[in-house]
Length: 474
Ligand code: FAD
Ligand code: 2HG
Ligand code: ZN
Image 1 (cartoon, rainbow, N blue to C red):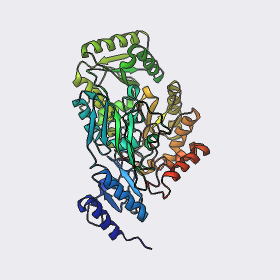
Image 2: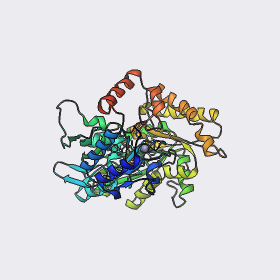
Image 3: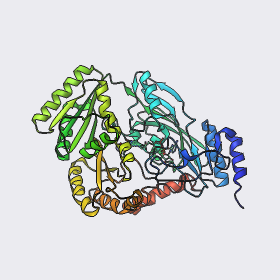
Image 4: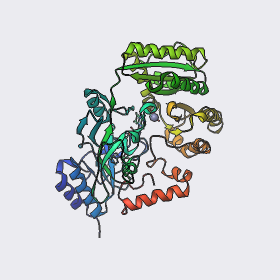
């Protein structure tokens, strides 16, 4: 029997209303939903479906299951692994969650929020703040990424050091399973040992096991005080010593520790010329760090300054500047958050998102900085990331004069150099961005046969028709 797309679109329109079913065939511009943030993956969609409730998601999933149409869940489409866009055959439908965007409840006493999957991360942060609470997940795309996407990628960001990644922030989930049934796991409990912890399956699954429609997440006391500093260090080994020393000095108040290479700072200042030089001298590496607590800014700033002076005396840093106020702190954070944009503006780069035991990172980076130029003349490493979590973005920009396409064709060879070294050190080739289409084949190279077999069995058990984001992860 041939597939009748006209009748399928009619059925979808009947379920969620004609205004919420977009299609190229119907003359709609769906380009924002078929191309990933980097412009690396261009797909085509049978339709872009925009349900407005969990019941509508269920109805669409049942329609898809009846007709054998694959669904690609999509949040803010800011993912960096091509997981949120359809393949090129035009047979998959994008399930865009953006209309499910309510914060259903903030339970201040329980320190939890129950929020729909399509809620923008920044909106949740703001609503938590209005209730005197903190939702701590924080990343450069927070103005457009959505909670469902954050959960499906197990997002990290810049406060993992203190609060953990998304997995550690999720207490409960509501998920529409591939057969359309709604699995209600929306419990705001910090202790619950009643059998398998099913919600964990969907966190980090990149939409391959079901559609997340809502979540109950942890909130924290809003920190009244924040102190930010920017240090210059002569090596990553020195930065690692600084990290250890600050852990001792600051304890629970220590919220962020971001490593930024000299070339990364230079790139941001080139493309965002309003960015001030963070320190008077130039250093090969810099660290952006933050502390927060419930006291006053002045007291916290003084505590951070005392700690940093002790670190300077102990040879854990070379130079340091403390932000004197919120505006200066924000300027330093903007520098950090603009690195991805600066690299994007600069042209083609091959991204890496690796994690290693912190004790092995300095050796790994030195080894790579020595080997890369030998293997790829002129390649420009732009290294930065969440050193406090053992997670670095070892991105490699194209050598001057090399065309973007030609550089992208080197991806496999560059990846092999880096990822073989990472795996030899028992690290991971994807610390926070996920697998998607970008790293699917590579993941299969590095995982054991036993790991892959268990993953496939889970996929088969939950999604026997293979309609949830096929072609991604596995
Ligand atoms: P999308 O890109 O839309 O989707 C990502 C994946 O989740 C896809 O597999 C999709 O199918 C699935 N999905 C989306 N919604 C659902 C749902 N409701 N149910 C089931 N599956 C779903 N990431 C970090 O971890 N740390 C960072 O510091 C960071 N910084 C970034 C900075 C910039 C400038 C950019 C562009 C990206 C950054 N990212 C970072 C990557 C990205 O923002 C995160 O992966 C984010 O969590 C994706 O959310 P999204 O809503 O855009 O998801
Ligand atoms: C970050 O830490 C993000 O800024 C994006 O994870 C990293 O663009 C990148 O490679
Ligand atoms: Zn990151």
